[in-house]
Length: 222
Length: 305
Ligand code: SF4
Ligand code: SF4
Image (cartoon, rainbow over all chains, first blue to last red; front, side, top):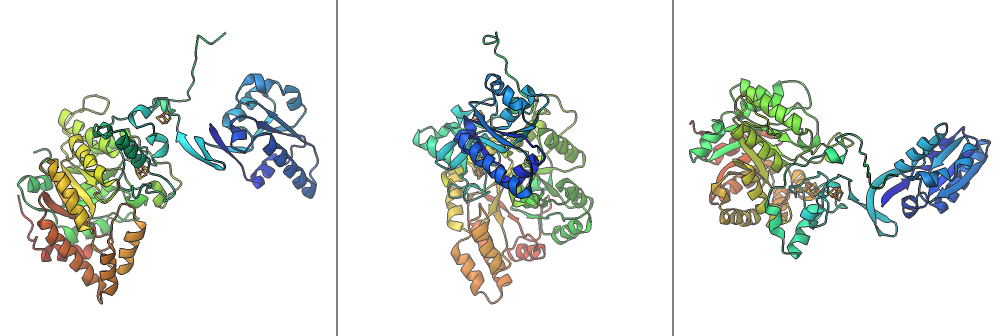
């Protein structure tokens, strides 16, 4: 999933000031799973904005809505009419959702209410962590299913560096050294010899360094 | 000879090498490097010029190397992959070759989070092992990473770091083997305080025959005060400072003298370890002590080869 966190309220308040009719728009997929932009967070944030507006005396209505996915045009188009009646949309989706809105509603102000943080997993309720950096050329077959690109602080392909101590990364005692995890797992699988080979230099062009990425599947296009 | 550097000649002739660190300043004056060069030139075979060490911005290592070279001191160019991508690394390698630098130490670098620009974007385009391999290919095959031909020679004596005290311990020797097969001609280790662990690591190194394929220089960090000992014990990831060392420093009437004593004892013990071809002294902000340590360790005068 894409993990999101809601921006600080002060920042949201500042960016939404002056837009009288404001639509707070949630996204029921990743944003909801991140407890940052689902229906419930939309309701909470909208009422917080209303309360704040009361104290500052700002006029205008704060509307609430949530759709299944802001990253797909079919869902976004469903709320065309609602959007056309407001001055700005505060999206609680990821950055992709915000931009889809901006593309579909060319003349509308679209604001981001969340920070899109990473591609990760829910470790437990309230704890998410990064797993993938979307590098465009997955190497997990060579690293015991654990990703050094997303999870090694230095993206080392021939780790671990000299800062790995007691299973933790040199940057913090709260961060696991993924190379320790890789070695532990390969040891359990009896495949540690896999790491004796030097891992070659990576092609970063599919990772975004070759320019913005796009994928076209002719077989699916209508 | 791969590079013809003084360090290479000393090591290849089977003599015990001595190197030390000469970090450049947080400023533009050439005097700091020159002063360190003056202090250390008679007692060392080559001086490492650090590269934005601990991710703190300083004068570039390449310029520090040139300043040393101008005064007849042989530099070791430290380069970290944290701050440069493959284009910049290769460009600087060519530049260093043109300027007559003959030793390079290929490193990952401490994470930018530790330094004075913690919000910087780290580069890490290639890692230190890939970097060693790249320099070796540039030197031996006259080829860039992309396979294109390089005009002119790239004569470097290639170094790498090894940390026997980091985890996982059993993997450390595999990592050294990878660095050696990538092309590391010499190795400078992390500072040694935990001698039993180092001896155990060296045994594993010898079992794999790595001491015959590369020159291992044992790292030393002279301790100036008990505060420094404690700090290294508690806060520096990848260093192993046993409690006895901290206690010795704490109990000492003259901590600096005790620090020198510890360092000299370590050198004596290292001389007994098979497969050690030299020492590398990292006396951060205590360069004045280095010549005394080398003198009292019986490693003077330095050989001329
Ligand atoms: S290797 Fe690339 S695609 Fe695979 S998990 Fe890591 S970042 Fe994601
Ligand atoms: S300690 Fe481990 S995770 Fe951290 S940078 Fe080094 S190898 Fe990567």
